[in-house]
Image (cartoon, rainbow, N blue to C red; front, side, top):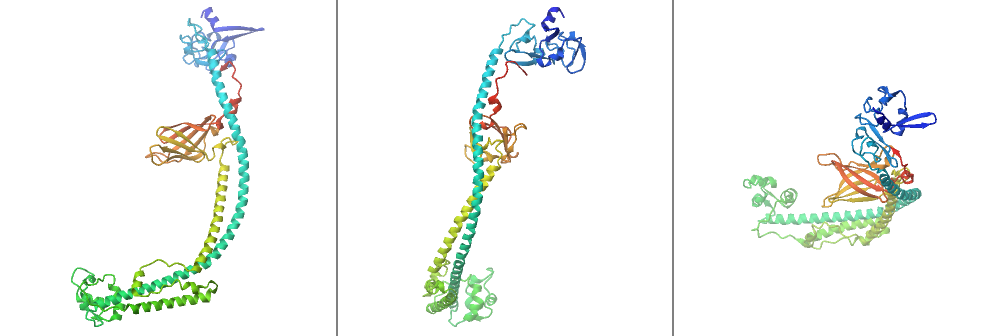
Length: 525
């Protein structure tokens, strides 16, 4: 190496009696490793070489550390000082390649290439970007401090409200117990009166059904007794072939006798053994013209007598057990005597319970009033419990070490794209809503904070969403970055069924960035 090359690679600095040699392309932090001496130890410790081999344009160290200022080593590194800007390191083979890689042009010191020094312009641009970032964080931190301040008040108010509700709940629950006792006291006579009313109605209905059966049986017997001998014979019943159970052969004498149980039956025998067997299948013969008329007046009189007897028994029981309710007069209104069998037939299939008497209505009104009061107090109890649960749920949410994410509680935010609206309800769930219609798809339920170890509050995870067709359950990762408003700015699906969201919020702004001094003009990477 000639003297000119050596002088270009070394700078001699005299300080007192100490002579120091500074080589090109070496970061300031590594200068002590290159102190002028007889030998040089490769930085990886692999070998020791004569110091004059350093920057001799020949690679002697395996790590290329002996040639920081030349392009001899393919794995070497050259440090750009870049005065006024940021020091950078480039691969050594960029040195002297005719391309200005360092903003101060020091990587082309051996060539005739003239490099414009752009470090000042880059420094100005970097300062502007850093200042803009600092200003953004400063504005965000100001809002973040407001959120933290409010969260302290909200937490204090929440705790006070929770104590107030828990104290009030005990009082309202005691009130509810009293209302429950009053309700039970009012429902007891109401239920008793309703039960008596129902029992009486069922007894009357049973009488009406008995009358209907009796009428049908009389008419059927009269029709079958064609010769009016007060008997139904095999020949008379055999005409009704619809009673033939097998419907395959003729209605034989043996089959008819099996129904009658004899060659003929009288009215009582017909009533006991035959009528119920044939009543559902029996059809009146169209050609039958003569039949013994049923004495409807006698049937009605008998029915009315039976109903009167039922009513009298009910009145007697009511008078003996509940004189204070005076059921004797009101209960008479419940009974509707059957004047004729025709009037009875009109109502025989009416299953509607008759209207309650006035005294029972009064009891129902009293019970309704007691129930309404109980329900009103019970509603207050449930409402207080819901409020307590909500406050406890809010208290349990991790909103950051200082409550900086407390503004998110019970808040939802939308991100619009062409096909979908993505809605995230903080600490609850996230959904994908199709703009073309159809049901919403849950892409995750709040799981927890998942940011890096030094700040876990920079990311949150929503998991166990709706399962993709033939795929995994959907999930969403939310990454927070500094901004002056709470809003999602991007949603993507980098992996099938795994969504990612970028969310701007003052809560993610950094006080250190907001208050950091401007960087020094010279930096090393």
